[in-house]
Image (tube, rainbow, N blue to C red; front, side, top):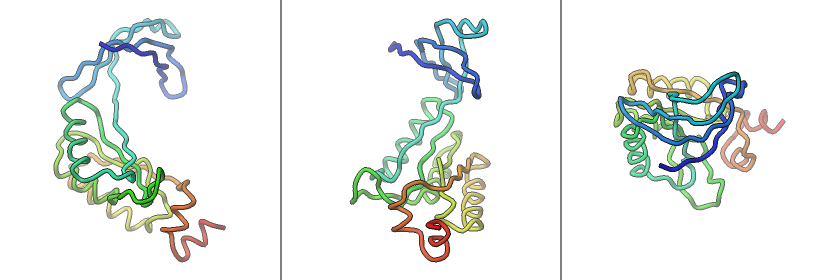
Length: 173
């Protein structure tokens, strides 16, 4: 089993450095055995962590790729599958991007356990009432498994291309 070192934190409190040596999946959870000496007397042992997969969906990820990722995420006991919410490829032009919330709607209908959401949806892309309706729809389809990540948006080129009208004027101000 591969071994690698990782710093483990709880909130902002460091728990120490450990060598992660074994991953177990079962009952829909990922269990990690830690070996090492932590802080505050935490000597390692077995700890359950909620681990999610985050994918940069704007870089040409196809619908078939999303379905395969979601099925593997469920099968291997990860907690959730999250995606970025970009309209423009960051690593180069010409790559396709499926809409984040439409993709999550489809994945909600094809999965049964994993949490689904965005990391993050820029507040400038959609009117708040439109985003609320989209997230509510995914939440209903998924039976309460949606997570909404919101942010200001950081990729200036994307905002220049995609954000229009009054929202663009406010963003550029």
